[in-house]
Amino acid sequence: MTFKRIHAVSILCAVVFGLSACAQGPSVAEINALTDQIVKASFRDESHVKVERLTATDETNRLCSQADVTGKPLDEATAKRIEAANLQSIKWPSDGKFLGDWKQGEAIAQSGRGLTWTDKAGDVNGGNCYNCHQISKEEISHGTLGPSLYNYGKLRGVTDPDSPAAKPIVEYTWGKIWNSKAYNACSNMPRAGHSGILTEAQVRHIVALLLDPKSPVNK
Image (cartoon, rainbow, N blue to C red; front, side, top):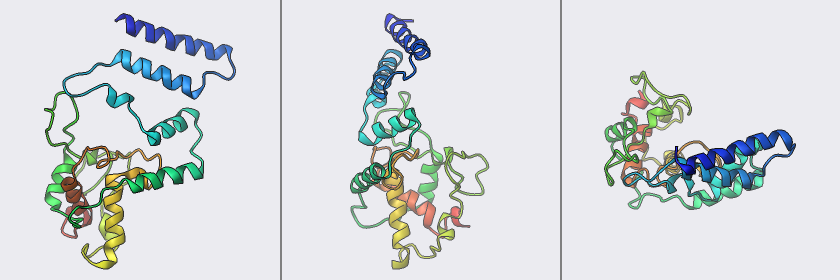
């Protein structure tokens, strides 16, 4: 264990033991500062993956993290403000086309590769969608952190994604994938497009996976 790690652990212990003697305990700012110290002492840059990924944050993540620490959900006004700001950040399809190839979308949903130090910088990332969702009935291994997306388009009455009637659902689906926090301020779903996890083309393919009537999702 390095000196930095010993120092960080010592600080953590001091805080923990201090809680027993102090009814109020440390402030959120103090806990956040301590967390940053521990992360910086316990992790290191490796290849193209930098520790900054864990410590860099925007207002959305900062406020939602504080809500987690305190156990108090965001007040309605703050949540709405965060959602509005994230909605403004959504990048809509540059060519106006929301749907791509559902078969490519399936491959993206199945792939969890990318963004680790063992992946080459510049490699194409996967969506890792099955880690949190059921998407098709053929997939017997899937996560349950998020809701089932099986029959996503069918349940919403989308028989022709290109029709004007389907436009609200199509746009919502794109926006949700691009930046989930535009619709739920402290959503656990990654902001796939906003954070650069997925490209515009990849988002287009996943939208097709969810809404194309020919996709196994809607069978």
